[in-house]
Amino acid sequence: MRGGQDLGGLPGFGAVEAEANEPIFHAPWERRVLGFTLAMGATRSWTGDQSRHEREKLPERFYRAATYYHIWLEGLTNLMLKRDMVSGAEVASGHMQEPPKPVARVLPAYEVAATLAKGTDYSRPAVGKASLAIGQKVRTRKADTPGHTRLPGYASEKVGTVERIHGFFIYPDSSGMGLGDDPHWLYAVRFTAQELWGRATPDTVVIDLWEPYLELL
Image (cartoon, rainbow, N blue to C red; front, side):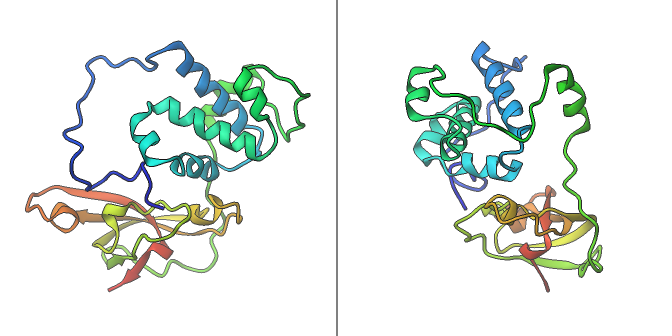
């Protein structure tokens, strides 16, 4: 879906202003939100794609006015509300009122650093062979799904060149909607700035795209 997060190519937002010596966290509560998100993600109550999609579904007006970790907190709260892991009354009061719901896993503090360093493996055993080859010209399909997708709107219906075959990976469009892994081949595709934005510059953009997003020219 094209929500508040999909800004690429949209006019009217001005230049990106880099913050000199930007801190990792702008306020103590942001550190806590990151901790909440990591801890709840480790419970395996939802996938990373479902977590991302929950943030994308936030109203555009809220999304574009909110700070980074405010968006994370709102998405996490909605995930927990939908799974009855917290009640509306608890959210309003800021205090637990019901016993905690059992979860599949609890991440202890002493394992956090090692868990983050290890990351999550989204690759899956390949089925068959990749249908696209390095150097082939491809066109992206129209990004018109109402669900989760990793095909950005600015790269919809654009022509690029396959630069690398990453392997066989979980398909976010399925994972983000709770429909299972449904793995597909993943490619790095290079686009010119001329193709994406109509500007004749030497710049290019490389985007990782799953096979269902692409069609061979």
